[in-house]
Length: 70
Image (spheres, rainbow, N blue to C red):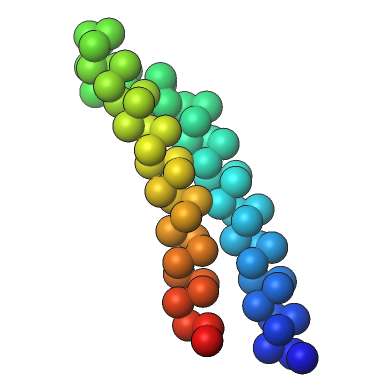
């Protein structure tokens, strides 16, 4: 029972952390591109990739926690 409770708590923590990181990444996606270039084309490409990065960060948190469970 303790292991199941620990897993449930960890999953809730990773969901909240993953959502926080994803939301911040989505909000700064246009700002991040401006740090590297002033060209609109580059900024737009970076913004598109940041959406993929947000999804990847969120799903990676699940993989890290659940890889050790059976």
